[in-house]
Image (cartoon, rainbow, N blue to C red; front, side, top):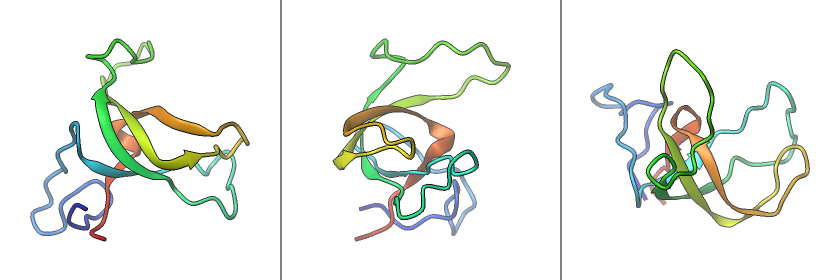
Length: 101
């Protein structure tokens, strides 16, 4: 797995991590709306650029954000009980490079 990184930046250089197909990631869940006690942030691998695959959600915004398709290591149940999900479209701001195994 990838070198451990602080939230969104390389610990040594402070530069943002590079995301792309094949990068192992952890999806940081939005726990403000639902803390989902006992539910761990799921890990997986980026399998596609959602925009290039025609899968990005339309969301009018002032800031364009990359959206990636993540395939989970094991089926994932959402904080809302939905699932099991094998893949998901995830905005880059919700991704963190996975720590070394």
